[in-house]
Image 1 (cartoon, helix red, strand yellow):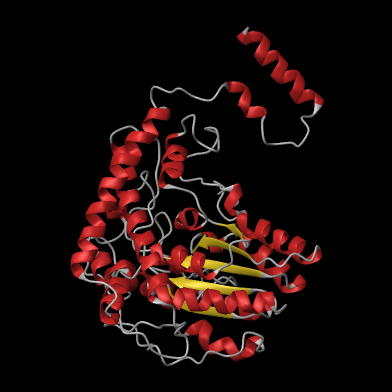
Image 2 (cartoon, helix red, strand yellow):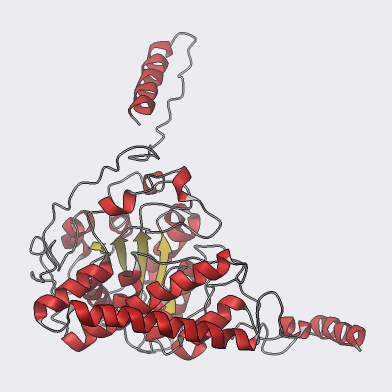
Length: 431
């Protein structure tokens, strides 16, 4: 790291000295460096922001009053997992326990699916380790009728909206019980009953789609908020800016979340933004941005509830930056040891969202270490049973699979003539 910076400084000095010799200016690009690489000690500073540092204004306040919030950090839980400050949503213990149990289920489910992929029983997988609060707290803060456009690591939303672990396992396998009929990659969940729109492989497309859906909801007078999520790497794509520009102009009821988990598939988040935060980008478009401690369940809940209230009161969009950490690999196709220290996650100042919420509940007298251990054991057994049942509906390698003609289903309300001909040809060949 130091050698790289020294070389970059030397290159800049050389370029500066050569300027003007032939009437041309030598290029000198700024290429952001990751703060640490494999073999180096991770360098994270402890959060300087404390739970009471940022006030909680009325949701309809002018966006300029939120500038400190875009560059600060909305927190409720301190480093010892005690809740305080104006952003404390005062959630009842029952809701907190529900959130904790969902996060534990997702973590165990992820672990089992990763094992299945390594065994050749799944083709691909993405886990949400250390990011579980981002989706779980937000999902519980939103109304059941709100429309959701998630990205890869928000599958806790499925459980919140009524899907089961069995539904999710069958989708990952792609068997005959898969509600996507085997036509989506694993973890590309959708749940019509729960108003969860299908995840898209070309990440970023969900942002403008979500803004369009929010515009439609407002146009037709539906009391509905739309929420969408993408990662810090995706925030460097054009889709991000198209979406927030439309949101700025038309001011629909939308919550746009950038999940800043520090790393895209192999590049550090600083390659995707030239500023201090992603939330600060909202200021240029004229609406609020909040930077939130994404591993603080209560802070995520509070910020989402604030943005949703703003949207329901016709205040327009909000950009939330969920400041978190990607505990695992980008996907099963990724080896993070090639670009970041293997023990980097231990140094993340935001800690583990499951552990922080567990400790908070223990402080409240609503949970114990023994109950948590029992929850882990029960959840592990449940996941084992779920996987066994899921494979009774078909396995990735042996089937059975949905028939080929299902590729024509669920795309058009009425199948166009040319696709009818193709389907008839396919059925004729099968006969």
